[in-house]
Amino acid sequence: MWTIRDLPMNQRTMHFADRLYAAAKSRGNSLCVGLDPRWEQLPEAVRRRHPGNTLDAVARAFEEFCLRVLDIVAPLVPIVKPQSAFFESCGPAGMTALQRVLRRARELGLLTILDSKRNDIASTAAAYADAAFAGTRIDKESHPVWAADALTVNPYLGRDAVEPFLAAARKTQAGVFILVRTSNAGAGLFQDLVCDGKPLYQHVGEAVAAWTRENLGACGDGDVGAVVGATHPAELARLRTLLPDVPFLIPGYGAQGGTAADIAAGFRSDGTGAIVNSSRGITASFAPAEPAWEAAIDKATRDAIAQLRRDTPMGRL
Amino acid sequence: MWTIRDLPMNQRTMHFADRLYAAAKSRGNSLCVGLDPRWEQLPEAVRRRHPGNTLDAVARAFEEFCLRVLDIVAPLVPIVKPQSAFFESCGPAGMTALQRVLRRARELGLLTILDSKRNDIASTAAAYADAAFAGTRIDKESHPVWAADALTVNPYLGRDAVEPFLAAARKTQAGVFILVRTSNAGAGLFQDLVCDGKPLYQHVGEAVAAWTRENLGACGDGDVGAVVGATHPAELARLRTLLPDVPFLIPGYGAQGGTAADIAAGFRSDGTGAIVNSSRGITASFAPAEPAWEAAIDKATRDAIAQLRRDTPMGRL
Image 1 (cartoon, rainbow over the protein chains, first blue to last red):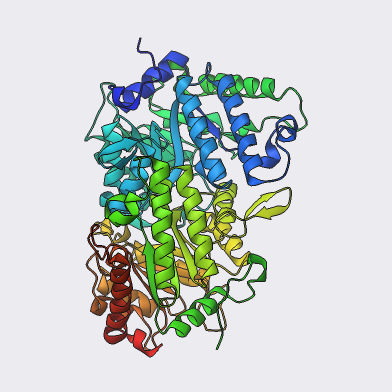
Image 2 (tube, rainbow over the protein chains, first blue to last red):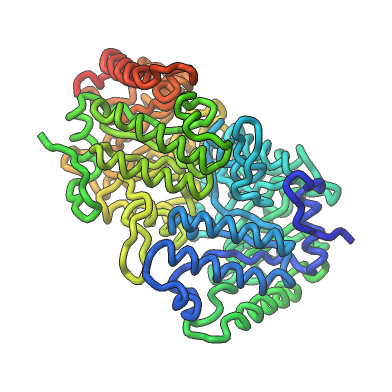
């Protein structure tokens, strides 16, 4: 069986989808732990070690908490998804914390999806993409910034704006997850508008399917995935049928209301094809005053895996 | 006449659109200088002062360059637009540079649009929005991160995802610019899809018009603007007619190929209604070896203003 190690960027010789499925098979699940640290949800024990109510203190608390979460979940799950917004909200110190969280995840053998929903055009998109993957170029040398395995990207600007993300990802055998059908209640305002007989999200999904077929891995999936919310089971089922080669990243499980039954249709029958993200359901699975918060995270992770293995095709991994 | 000063966040008592138009009237133009620093385009004189080819050195060079640009353009233009991507591409040190650039712009009396095209849902969107405007809350106190006057936001996720940005902006009399029709050649892939008889970008534009009417300033414009590329003059003219209360931010002038004549239709006949951004046309208006690069920036700014005042209604400001 393939094993996932902390490969330096230039030794990433395996296709993103193959790395993803090898990691999922090795853990027997494709649960992704979302790292969305919020000050008011941190364990009080962690908060007390970072007093002063400054952004720098909060950033250090986020780092301590997330590193501990990584230690707990690394033996259990294949992949984690830090959410840029919460690190950015601490300013520069938050970005340092994010770098350290991503580095520790790699060291622990976890794959990383940097959830920052980036989007821009031309050389500006390339700046985001180089930072996410191969590193920022200075006089032809690349300097790693986030060194993530995958990045979430917003598709509104079109293929030429997505292109720099694909190009940068493909240099390091990384992946891109395109927002197709998001998990918020109002996602349909634009995403459900019907154009040429089908909703916008389906147009985006079919574009993603075409892009992913440009670079398929040995496992049959490509390196461009689709973000499809667990909160829209009908759309999820429809997209799974329409986009056979596309790995799905499914947010909205747990705290946002999506159940395991809701997301079953996001998998292929062999249990592949979907990464299910849970953030607060795991990292806020305890009251801040709870001293045994680490045990709560361990239990919530194991419970989510058990539930998903029981109620979705993930059990066949 | 109103004057624009560096108001602390909690003293921003004037509506964003009123601040914008007061600033434009005081300068006699609505040119926005885009701050998109690229290492290979920096003056060699600046690069030489930051040797070592590290991200930290590049971040310090970006800061030095942008601060000097601000000094040069502050007497000439009302507003500047730092591009997050280039600062983020230097890692944490780049975010420190971005904070200092935004602070200096405020000190010089310039309005600031943080161009980061952020988008997410619920409390995650709120984290980005608080960072952009009022500051990140820790135990009910707000800690400024970017303290920008406006932020660019991607609309694909729908109104409920835009809502946290509007709410945070309205707490500090700030503004939000929603991507409607972007300036890249492939913008139409999704934005031009026809739904219910009109293209997607028009649906987005009409939503922006409804959102901006929730909070109109004394000048008659609202606090939600539209990003509409200079490279699509027909769409620009159509949107100006359809969205009377919406301030436009028009990128794509100059280096991207949009001419002053192309963007004339983006203004109302009295010269209001449009902010025209130029980035490389000003900040890369010289060869890196040019010793008189500061004079080149001054001249490029004055030339752009003169051209826009001559060839668009901006001359009536």
